[in-house]
Each structure stands twice: as C-alpha cells, then as structure tokens.
Length: 511
Image 1 (tube, rainbow, N blue to C red):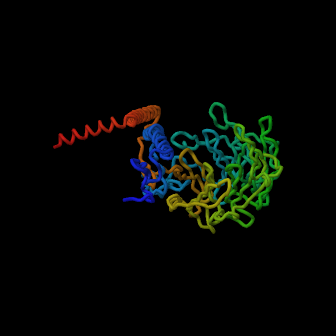
Image 2: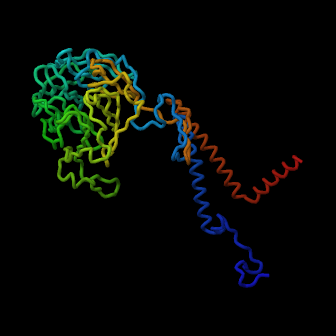
Image 3: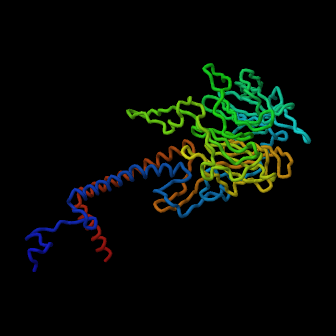
C-alpha cells in the first residue's frame, strides 16, 4: 500500500505519461515532436537528395564516396599507379619511362624550353664537345592528344643564345638575355609572334625598346597578370645578382620598358620562378657560394580592399600594414623559406630540372657535390605558410640509370617530360623521360563513417543521360516509399490492424 509521499502516486485513475528516448522526453511533448521533425527532415533529404545524387555519380564517375570517409582503414588503388603509396601523396609522379618520340634533335644542353599555344620550343643552347658554343638553333614540336610530336627545325634566332630567359605572354614569345657565342651575358630581347594560320613562330624580331637595364644570363623569368618579371641571373662577370625587373603591359598592348622592383634578399642565378597565388616563388639555382637549398618568396601588392558580395562591407587585406602604399603588381616583401621549418630544400643541387604545375614546384635530378642524382622532390606552397616541406616518394624518383644534370622539365597534358641534359657519366643525351602527373584515387576505401566504391564511369553524353535516368529512378522510388510511409503513419491503427491480419494469416497457413 502506497502512502501519499510515494512519488509514483499520481492520483486515482490517472495514466502515467509515456516516456521516450531513454526516458528523457515526454512522448506527447514538444521536445519529442521537435526531435521527430528533425529526423524526418534528414530522412527526406537523404532519400530525395543524397541518394539520387549518388546514383548519378555512381553512373558517370570512376569512384563514389558514400557517407563521410574519415580515417580510412582500408585503401585499394588501381594498378595504373604502378605501386605508389595508396592513396598517392598530392604531387606524386607515376614512375618514369623512356619517351623516345620526344627526343631532342641535338644535345639538348643549355637551351630554354617555352610552351606557346599548341607548340613547344627548345630555344638556343650550346653545341660542341670540347668547348660548348651558343647556337641559334630552335626546335619545335606539336602538342596533341597523344602527347608530343617529333621535334622539327624551327625558325632560328638572329643571334646565338644559351641560358636565355623565356616567357609566353599576351600571345607572344619573348627570349630575354642569355649568353652569346662571344660574351657570357647579353641584354637583348627577341619577340616571336605565332603565325595566325600554322600557329608557328616564323620570325624573331629584336626589341631595342625592351632591352634589359643590364646584361643577364641564367635569369629566372615568369609571366604575371600584367607583364613579365625577370629575377636575378648572372652579369658579364658570371656572378649571381639580386636585381628584379618588370616589363608592364601598356595601354597600347605592348610591354613597357623595364622598371626596378624590390631586389632579391640574396643573389640567385639559374633558378626557377613561378607565381602561386599572390606570390612569386624562386627555388633552386646558385647563390654567391654555389648551389643553394634556400627558396625565396616574393609577395606582390594587391588591392587593399576586397569588396564583399551583396551588402557586405569591404574586408581589409590582412597584409595591408606590410604592403603599405606599394603599387599594385609590385613586390613589397621578400621572405626566405628558412623562416618556415622544412621550407628549405633538403640538399643543394647543381643543374636540377625545375618546373611548376598546378601550384606545385618540382625539382628533379641534378648533381650533389659533383655526383648526379635521381631524386625528385616537390612542394605545394600555401598562402598563409609558404613552403613548409618538400616531399619525395621513391617510386617518383628518376630511374636508377636515368640521372640527369642540366635537363629541362615541362608538363604536357597528364605527363611531365624531362628533356636533354647529361647522364651520370657526363655524356650529353637528347633522350626524353616521361612520368604521369595524375595518380588515380583509390577505387575502394573503408573509413569510420563511410566508404568509397567503384563506379561505372560511363563517359560522354550517353553516360550523362544514363546518369540522369538513374538519379530520376532513385528519386521516384524513394518518393513512392515516403508517400507510402506518410499514408501508413496517418492511418496508424488501420495499418497496424492490416499488418497484424497479414501476419496472422501467414502464421495460420504455416501451421
């Protein structure tokens, strides 16, 4: 018999409220109603949004992510990656192979590689055995769906050049400075305009108005949004310099004379330069003491106010104080990579092949203390931190017998080509090596909250149409299921009776 102090006593004839969710909520209260509404909303999004979307990509994509694949425990990669770690690190190269169709027609030494439109040019260089002499030779190959065609003789330069800086900007090819057959550095600039019919450069014109302020050879050259920047290089005394010049695109559509920009913090020659985000990165090459491992970052001035969309207020550039009143497009600050742990290259190299692709900087081959190496390293600078580390994967290194010094690297489609240079024995070779730049993602993964499964990867218009049909079919089926669930929920008592009758009849027939 319970007394009036018993907490379970709720009065004569009263019915205890039904509790749900482990007794936390009243089954007839607003809390449980809110939880159910959220759950049903998620179910509707899942069935009418997520599942049809996955059905489409299951048809047209090679792989499909299901759920949130965090901390994958199982990874299976396709055989096309040829043994790279799975998943392959960003920037990794599929192992190198010989590419005889891309062999240069000559020694392939000390020339400059330039891509312009559907053609690639190997400009100048040196020839000879005992004494290397600059040449006027220009070789050209066509970029097509298969990669690179065989090289052919192009229109030669008016004067011999080696170690020239090159850039393709505003539809024109520029050959900047370089050594001649009589002097270690020149100040000349030649321009070539592709023919409107063939797309080939059929003539080179010397631009006296664009002559460099001083002679340079082995300078780093990169095109920016509004002109061409020349960094460092050697003067006639063969010493690396710190000068930085920019030729800005004028209102007439022609480049204006060179203007001084903020100089490099240390001398540099035979390096590479590339624009990543709003910064110019300079890596590889030589400083005043020889081969250097330090990479440099030059920050370019941009608009101090980044206008927001709609009615949002302008946002002040976080680097506004450092940029000050620097003119937009100029370099207002140089930073050395040594300020970031791991930003410097592991070991200085002489004559390494340097190139960039998709915001990633590469360094391949070269020599360390006079010994040719096969190592390949790369890094992807970030706007906030710059270069923080250089990555290397053994299978992405050059073949054991493929060490190269003084070679040139260029990305053509889904491959990078390494052209020319000298082998480990010092013999010059025009042979080419090729490596894939796009390792495939894992075809199957299992994570804590999801997995990756193979898709049908149907290509073209037919694949898209079948994908749309798959998505529409999944949506229609799920809509019918939701509609049936809504009817059953609205007629709960009758639905329970109907199910009970069906189950009872089935049980009776079983007996």
